[in-house]
Length: 116
Length: 112
Image 1 (cartoon, each protein chain N blue to C red):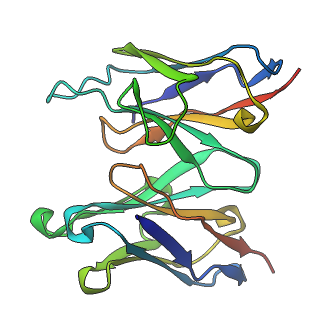
Image 2 (cartoon, rainbow over the protein chains, first blue to last red):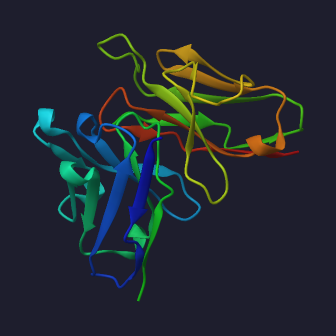
């Protein structure tokens, strides 16, 4: 059974940083690209970052609005993916979801609130 | 980026009735491998999105046959027949043919 679990959310002050983790099981993690998608309160879904697999040289991509502030990484030995977001702004307040490249299975999401 | 235009924004329905949601893309979603990566999701309140239909018309595991997807090129439709209470929520389309993947703005299916 595919399982995806995000952790690491919370309340952060503007300008602060946060590292989200996504632990997976039930599938061959090494075969998949991994994505982060976020959803601001009452809003729609927004893809924000992707990390490809070893065969694709672990290439990373992120949405333009976050470029320079976000780092996505993975640890294949732990079947886990991470999202580091720096210089957080109130508009980064959202639920952050982790999902694999086929966008079929999603985690339950983790809430990040940026407020003073 | 590919813009996904989803309509309507809100869709009042009666239980047992039918619903239809449209998703139009700003460019063709046919991949060079001839597949079309257009998917549909339902997000119930307080939950993560759940995949209903993948690649236009394929029902995901466990999805009832009341849900059907159709379309081609730039024009796609999700139909829900015999709407049940558990079908209420927000529906989203997603294209992953072109990078970056982009979502439609969402459709709220609610009781009339």
